[in-house]
Image (cartoon, rainbow, N blue to C red; front, side):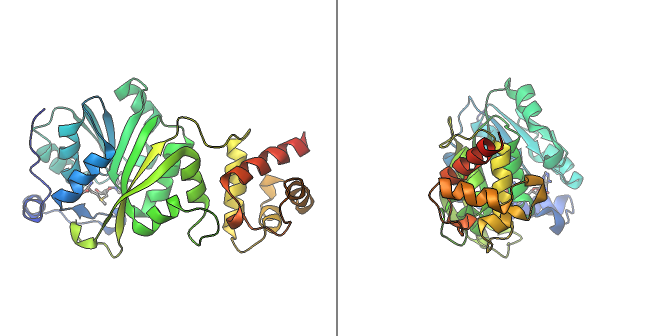
Length: 292
Ligand code: SAM
């Protein structure tokens, strides 16, 4: 389809908003993109071709959806705000490869959607995410093993940083470890507040997460590893032995932690924030071996 996007600049966005008397909902994290350069950059970074099926989370008035529809074979756009649906039906009326879904993305079975729309083949996720649920959206995609080739998203700058740092930095945490277990993160661009309407109070960044074909570490029980990771960062100033012993469901007491750390040649007072992904994986496998 060789259509040219009509949205992406402030004038056209204002025109659409006025036509429908649209009222921004703060609770839905609505900051619409009004910069064509940023839109081009996102599409380019996502490396979308006519073979691709794209899932867009939060299309807003359909600005990025138009760009995606031009570049991809098909797009499913999931939008929670029902006031935006008639607007999307209007702004996307020229595109016959877009399916609009009026739902909360956290309640959508994205695996089933990929199956239905793309025969179970990996989809590409592209979005200017609502910032209040960035982490659950990304974790949900990974933990539910939705077949995704890559996730190219606009997020809060600070969150993009958190996704790509390693141990020993203040931003390192459960999100960094989860992202790096499943994907290779790459910050594509920093985006200032004036590229959005209304302007957010924070800086933003586009990050691309390319899913690993094979994870950089192997672990017997992925779920247990992430429960251990979460517990050790819940109280990040605590040592690993204290952090884990405070979560009864894990059933890992201080003695077990000390023994495993000793086996690994690590200090018994180590904190989770100093441990690498490979060390968390080894720790998990050794805990399981101890229990066997
Ligand atoms: N993609 C548009 C753009 O770039 O101009 C809008 C991006 S705006 C940051 C986030 C969008 O996500 C809004 O349209 C908002 O209504 C929608 N949204 C918020 N929470 C959602 C949810 N739980 N499920 C689906 N969409 C959601």
